[in-house]
Image (cartoon, rainbow, N blue to C red; front, side, top):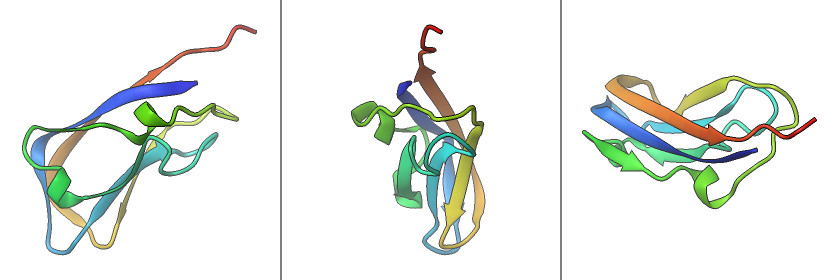
Length: 91
């Protein structure tokens, strides 16, 4: 079960348009289950954003890798760190 994490932009995210960033998994959950679509203005230098999964934990249905989705235009610069806290169920 994924139950928390941190999204930290160590270098400000920039874009020529109004880009958004969503973070989820490629399988086992939604494409925005870790962080719902967040505008570039919220991802400035050293911005720490509380992920969606901190308030709404979710159980994965299959193994999946972290997936970042950029929408409404390309990002032109920036660095985003994603830290995910999870637990593995006993078999």
